[in-house]
Amino acid sequence: MKIFINYFLVICLITCLFMTVATANYNQNTFLYGNKEITIIDNSLDYAMMKSIADYIANDNLQDNGNTTYAIGCLLTHDIAQSAALQVDHCVYDTAPRCVETQYIVTYCTRGCGYMEKEVVYEEWIFCCE
Ligand SMILES: [Zn+2]
Ligand SMILES: [Zn+2]
Image 1: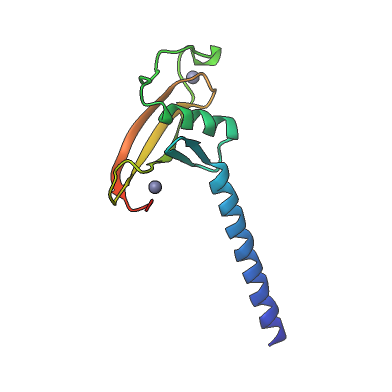
Image 2: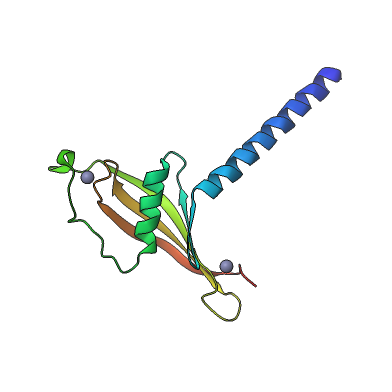
């Protein structure tokens, strides 16, 4: 019985640790731009890459910049990867649902040459802010 209780405690501890890690990652992956909140759903990326993807999504006025400066390794092909990102525009409307959630798939070059394209997966009104 004592062994069983110890086992149970260890499982609780592991669960707590995982939840703490998940929360920490969530904060680190989330970038704020005024009323706009962008979360990169990919824990394998380093901070600089997540930031540049978030910057790219946040700046709606920028065209998809497929023709920007190429890294030397990108003369022929890019090293393409994809990540999902979630955007929430807060308090867009005066009455509930006030906020808009948009999910994107972002295609980018892992060499950091600046090549990025985004594709909307879905967009919906959400009940978020009062
Ligand atoms: Zn490239
Ligand atoms: Zn909101």
